[in-house]
Image (tube, rainbow, N blue to C red; front, side):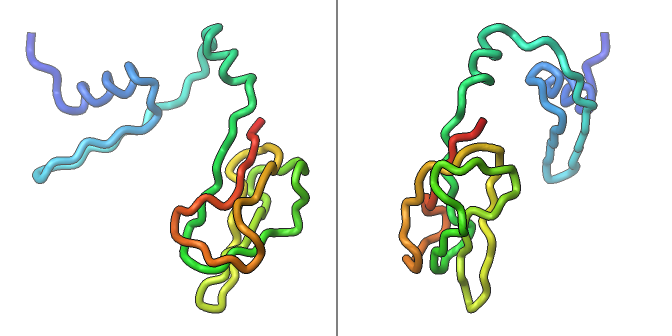
Length: 126
């Protein structure tokens, strides 16, 4: 039996770990694969995890000054909704919700300086 090629090994590893994309890179070569996502049955223990709300901490994507958007705490959010803006070099940069959920808390006040990757808000994702 011949040894499996790098591509075959990468595909098997991606399937085994339920990945839809994988990349293998060395100094000599780079292999990228994309597998079609095939929905399968959800195991019972996974279904319980999916149904529970998940707390997400939104972090600042840059250094600047924090300004909350006109969102009220406890208000439902859609993915892509602007929850805050970071003012940097005179430009206002939106911070977007990465999932549907409820805005629970801001960790900063309007005008506070903010560092890169500093937590700025808490969203309870659905």
